Length: 384
Image (cartoon, rainbow, N blue to C red; front, side, top):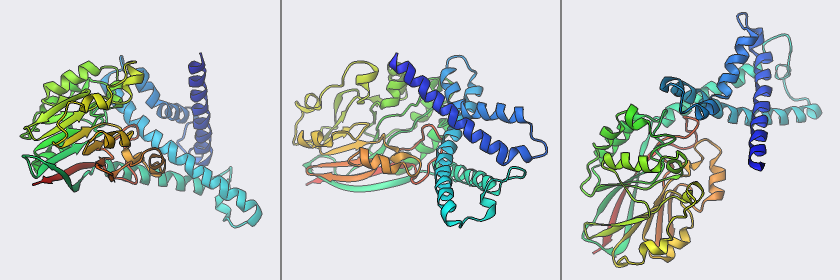
């Protein structure tokens, strides 16, 4: 009952905020355009503002083409809504100060009988922000690290490529996956590790797109390994997701450990969210590493960079994670920096080294601002 009421409250607040923004847009710009129709404006406005919710509710019965359009519309609107709220807060503060100081020009004030230059400026700014964010999200880079693990191994150096948060689905499709696979193959790694959220909201992409064939183009000599993220659990088709990934030659580790070439271990943890989605908590890390030869390097693949002290205490040498997106859109990194001990990049913690990726794909808004999607290229040397 409480959850239902909370959900109704969230939807009501969301609708109220959108109505307020719609009125500003209509009275500030569109009302004064010669071919504008009030009913058409509001129909398109409400369709756009609720598109993200509609596509989630109608996932089972809406045609794929309609889902694609609604996903893009809804994603862009979420980004625009976020920045519009921030901009209006700043404008509101300036107007409060202007009542005392009278420093704003006359065009800054609302004029009911003509197009408001301030509203036009905000609209132009939104278009520019979303355009740049889209371009940035489609231009990943290779982020390189060189680290040393003070243990012996038959493989030195070891070349690892790690990718997290691909979020394959309607927006991040097989063409984007092809870009990722081509970039990885150019690096010629020994092993590829996928740190969760490979698949976003549903598994229809395996039948509607050529995802399986593209993944099969990855052929590093030591294999491709993945762990589950929170989105694989949220989509409700964990088993089908795992089966489809493994059909694409991606070995999924769910609270499992694999010894690679008698030289090092890869420990793959189930995501922390499994406790809430399945009611079954993931295995303790102590159980996963208790039988391992601590004289060999141990690489932990865990979607969320959570409780790093535990991995350090249990003899893990390198933890690879994602999940944070580093906020994905500026200035959300200020939040992720407070939540996680490291939300992006490299951290040395006693005997543990941690690398967190901000991810390759996007979730929700199909844009990135303040960070750039990445493929993580790691060269590891060991003690001779």
